[in-house]
Length: 510
Image (cartoon, rainbow, N blue to C red; front, side):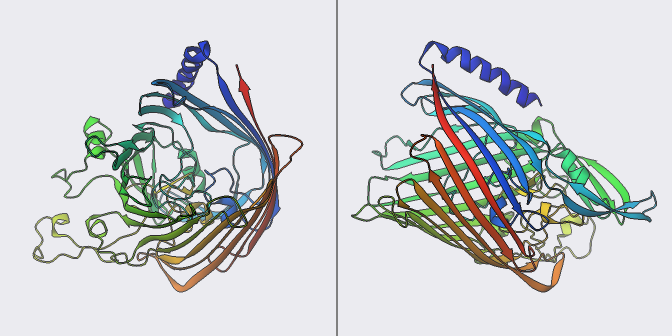
């Protein structure tokens, strides 16, 4: 809450400082109505929407405003806010109640739905030349992938709600001195605070497992890019995410085991920046997750572009060294020279089945063992961790939503149950006529569960989204969007839903 309070005061200061110059604020209002079947909305109706939509039936009003940076000024301010309110259908979760000895008392069903109103965004930013500082809650997307057409970035996808945070970095790619404009750099760095304690308390089964409350989030990345005015250019670098701090509560067969108070001192924050072996536990603290990213782009003479990219996911030394085979996101993207029947297309293959495991044995973990000459490093489980929460926020994946998310576990399990998954994704968008655009997304995937909890039989899922948006020519800023989404298979079940959204965009200039 301190971050939100600071952001609010910073927003007022930003507005006051910039009031002496011309001020342009972009405002928006969306009214969404959806109806369908299934416990939750189909996959593509929830994926990569910043956690705004999870339920099948909704009547939501989304209003907000933004004031962007003036890039022509050395010093500039930016701020924004967004609120969502309305009514949504509930999802029924099957939970149990246990006594202090771990004995089952009774089964019960609990209906859960989003709050009637919530703050989606509230942030203030300041920049000097090419460096910016941001505080608050701001929706962010992948810095490398097509947010509208991709299945999602493996580390920072824009799928979940944004965590309250303080972030700093380069506004955009900046020239590296002495490279004669050939090489550019872009990077960001942040610390955030998880605010979803209540969600875990309402969804956790309190049987076996754990959940963390009050933890911290750290993210950083660094990308390099060659000269984009050349026909060929390359973007490459890496991302790193880290969860630490807070209190972790452990349960075994319905009985409370213990609570671990994780370090939150200055040394813990420094270790988040530069993880190291503490020399006490024999392992690196916190939950680490990252990716090595490469995006190669070629621009043809007609100005169309073809991109090939890969994100290699890692969570420890073996996967960081690319010992986990083909695991990662592999994609191709086509960008048309101008809007038309096909303005853009993305094809992706995602694999997470070459994880090492399930056995893990390190003699350092067991002092005095006679098996000190043997070691078996395994136990990979992407997006899950034995000490902290899974890599999600309010049950929605902060990385790729391609693995079935915790919010879809109706039995009180708050982890990713299908991390050993592979499949294909296709996205196409176009502008066939004036004022009309469309988007089509489709995917197929197969899951083996996890190494720790494998499925007895593999399960599959096919998902589809068809979306059309029409801008009313007689009322500038007003548009209407219709969409239909469906899932078929055992992984997500058979779900269908349709939605209609009325949107208005406008500017206020002072």
